[in-house]
Length: 301
Image (cartoon, rainbow, N blue to C red; front, side):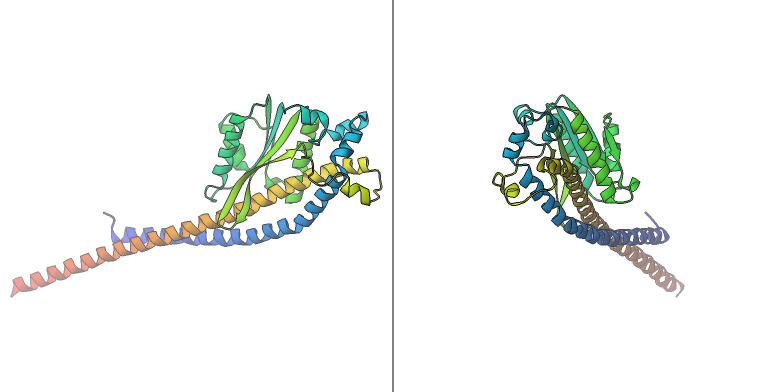
């Protein structure tokens, strides 16, 4: 059985750990507020860009340009384009977004489990992995899988730079591979206590639900609509990747806040348990010593 000094050492050790978990919780809270603000600030741009692109690239617009050889390079980015719609994907690209660090509960576990399940269900002829986050990279290396590209947010000056580089690599891979599809798997922020794993398609771009020609009929575009669509495509892909990364960062901060809060509570319970046991032991020692003193005193009478 541990001695009193050993219990005191254990209590001090747990208290030190508790201070660390409380600090990590505060840091995660600050980062969560910052990440949420960035998501909100970029929402208007992303939504406006999407409306503009979908207003231009309507099914009718795509159909009108389908016979133009020079338009084939950018038309295939749209689901409504004939070959992309008629033939199932043979090449599959998967962008998996995890964190670089741990201490965030099951945040990474659920993402990696979803990614592995998706890979098992795929019937595509070739799968290429784009991995953002060291946890995803380490996991797939253990599985013996080689990624097409690996990224870490620590290697970029900002999240926007990371999203730009990732989007460029994904768009380039999609352009080089016929009958391809790219999905992203990440955690989406719902609330501080809830994060949800989502799998969204990045490419090809789904046909809009808006009325055909609604955007192009009321606006005079300069330069021509097809040139504008071609220039907007990289920005659209980049905005979707940026959105996924920011949502993942928000969910990661929320998950770390919850994990560190639970760790702090568990540490407090452990401290209280050790303190109670130590007090009982000390009380037993005092009682035993008093009993010995009283017994000795009675024996000397």
